[in-house]
Amino acid sequence: MLRLYVKSRPYLVSGAILFLTAFNSSNALRVPMEQVPREIYDRYLSRVEADAPAEELRRAADEGNALAAYYFALRHTSYCPRDLRIKVDRALAFTYMRKAANLSTRPRAKAVLALYYLNEWGTPLVLTPQATLEESERLANEAKAEGQFLGYRVLGEIHLQRAAKLLAELDAISAAASDAAGRVRKLSEFANQTKKALDNLTIAADNGNAGALKALARIHDLGDLGRPRNHRLATEYFKQAALRRDERAARTLAERYEQGERVERDLRLAYAWTLVEAQLAEEKADPRRRRDDLEKRLTVAEKLAAQDQAAQWLALMPSEEDSARARLDPDR
Image (cartoon, rainbow, N blue to C red):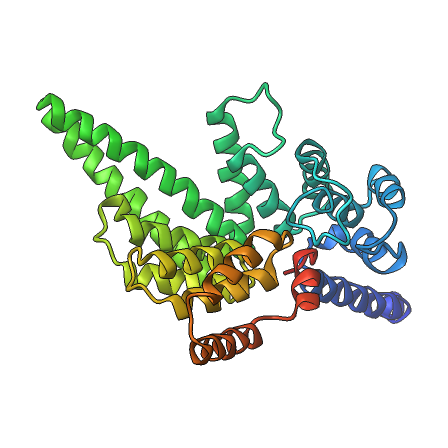
């Protein structure tokens, strides 16, 4: 027995080293241990790059490369930077994002697919709205369990939809002035869905998700879910989203300051946010037209102050290159 132990000791040590290597690689790559060899091949040996030719990505994806499927899907969306975009095709994006989520356990792929299901972007027509919502929730929960903040945002929006539906049902019960027990039950469920929506969206927003920031802004702007209206807080949420290079948030701020909508009218800030929007927008004709119109209504000193303010905001944002790279990062 002792002789057998001595002879097998090198194999035991080698096995322990291999196990620890696989375990550490699993943690570093954020995949189960059984998927480590495939993940290492996809990520380091197959040399798949986000900017690879479209046919090369498609071929690799069809051969089972999860990373290629992820890149190929995103490059068929408006979310992809224009210089890498193949074309916008939601059905194709959905097909290959589902392939990426099935081939790999990357939480980002699951979260993106959950978002597609939630918004019915490219989803099969045979699926009912309830089926797409349930699949979105399943994927978002899996992504959330692995710490993916987009999963929190998707869950927040799912609970937001359910809370809005319950609120409409409560209004109908009030109008009928009947079914007191049903009203109490729905009130409890409404409070539960509202809390889940706000909790998930707040976590996503605190971690820089622009979609969650805008969702919270709209809730506080409109007084949704029975919350008191808070335009100051809504404006701050829109600002934080804009500082994440969100063009729509910048435009919302420019318009509300120009029109004095829910904030005190301030043409200088409207001009500053229009300058920011013009920097972020792919289609620059409209923000430039509004910029030129605002310039005519400001003094030279006001224009200079607004330009300085816009420059300060732009300096706080991630660079365009970093932002573009982050959009395609499967591990973000």
